[in-house]
Length: 160
Image (cartoon, rainbow, N blue to C red):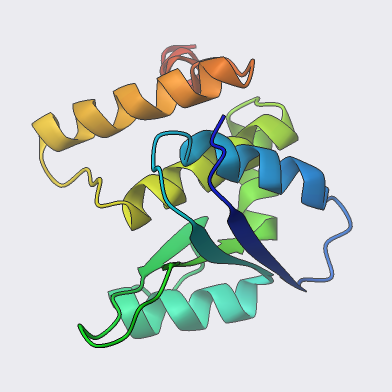
């Protein structure tokens, strides 16, 4: 895992009681940043559906909560910053998806943290090629964490 300093701020703005431990969030963040080679600052904000819906509507034009939103930060050229960006994760959506997809809740949290961080690092899934590249990177990171391929589980549930 990365030896580069990671400054992680965790904001818990959710009443959900089934939230991951700070140590787990930090472990997942470090795994997704393993190859970054520089100090990183990051905020993870865990929200309820109302805030998740508001942010998704404001920034993506979708009036419903979503699992994870990524807000990359780009400092002005004259400002030195190690802030990578912010992740906003809606706890109830994560819990609901984990149940629907028959996933271990903490594994699904790990996947969404990794997924969001890859977005902050410039990965995307707008085209098939981009999606394959991003999903491959996700699979590798999650495998290193001892977590099953999240896309295989989704495929099995959809076919089942």
